[in-house]
Amino acid sequence: MAGCAVGPDFKKPAVPPVSSYTSTPLSTTAATPDVVGGEAQRFVNGGDISSDWWTLFHSPALNALIDESLKNNADLKAAQAALLVAHENVLAQRGAYYPNLAANFSATRQSQSGTLSPTPNNNAFLYNLFTPQLSVSYVPDVFGLNRRTMESVKAQEESVRFQMIATHITLSTNVVAAAVQEASLQAQIDATRQLVDINTNMVQILQHQLDKGYASGLDLAAQKTQLAQTLATLPPLRKQLAQQRDALAVLVGRFPNDAPSENFDLAQLQLPQDLPVSLPSALVAQHPDVRQAQANMHAASAQIGIATANRLPNIVLSANAGSTALAMSQVFHSGTGFWGIGADITAPLFQGGTLLHQERAAKAAYVEAAQQYRSTVLTAFQNVADTLTALDQDAEALRAAAAACDAAKITLDLSERQWKGGYASYLSLLSARQAYQQARINLIVAQANRFADTAVLFQALGGGWWHRAELNQDQDEH
Image (cartoon, rainbow, N blue to C red; front, side, top):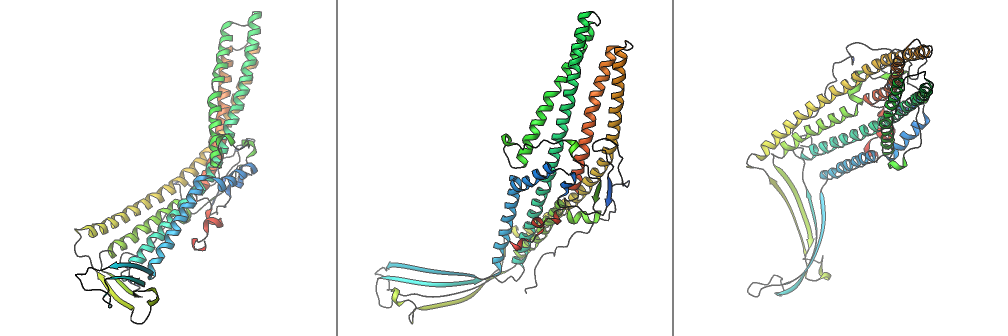
């Protein structure tokens, strides 16, 4: 009987028969020499993910912020508390395997109606009654209701555990992304300020030339317009930078008015060049979202057994023993004891179809969980494929942006020389400056994309949580 548990035994889903993430194999990205973040990146198939992958960016300030976030972030602490709740629920459910033992003591004073026979053997109508009693009950797990319930709550604990792990990985990735975005915005602001200085200087020169009769008012008005347009791009960038610092403060568990003092610079970050890419067969075992979906599927499978067991007879074994006396001093004396043993069996006969439809609902919920698992696996593979493609194209975009920036700088230098020599119009010079400004901004954005998408790849591959003791230990050790 101990081996009989109704309902299906859960089996892990088969590993997807997939050998690669992308239709076209990717091995090494393009390189852009002499540019920050321009190193070639090599995809190492079957490589393992480091537990502290963010250290590959070689930024002590970034490492310190991530360590602080893992200690103080409220969302992560909430996820850890949720895991503790789930674990305690598992321990609580274990009690169903054991008999229930209860002790009871009652003391009453009663007055019996005179029209009825007295209850005590001394024929007293007014008496005290003292009753200590010990009761034991036990529900044999004949059809596996307790075992399936235990299986379900343990699977739910696993689901919460991997949800916490996903929060941990997402947090570290978000800190890296926030730091990279902050560095990018600061670099864009610096580049824009330099252009403001150049345009301001040109306004002064044109004003002087206009006063001397060497330039037209149209040229001066055009340069002032250029300056105003450049200045107009600064407030949005400053706003984004302030919001990014506020977000970074919250990620590390601080209030916005206590934002970290660290200032990040793309030039101080090192782009990881060897990127481990887990085998597709390993992704389903290490991706926290997939593992969470698998645990949900396991819990749904156990719920079918629970619903099935609820339709079958339930047996309760019980026993009690105690003593009843008219005085405390007589308790447990000869003749005051009582005891009883019994067995109850209850079988549902008619519930209006409730139990039947609950079982059918549990089976439908399992199908739902199975399809959600498949969807999660497909999404996980998609995220890896998208990120690999993004990194490959980021390298191409950076190379193109660097070439465009170099060309724009040459064009600007030539335009300035031609304008000063009287061989080109001032409008052509303004156009060259505008193109150079946009080229510098595009280059900064392309650099930031390479750093940010590299962090996303580590997240998409599972973040190396299996190498962190605090995430990989058995909850029974607590």
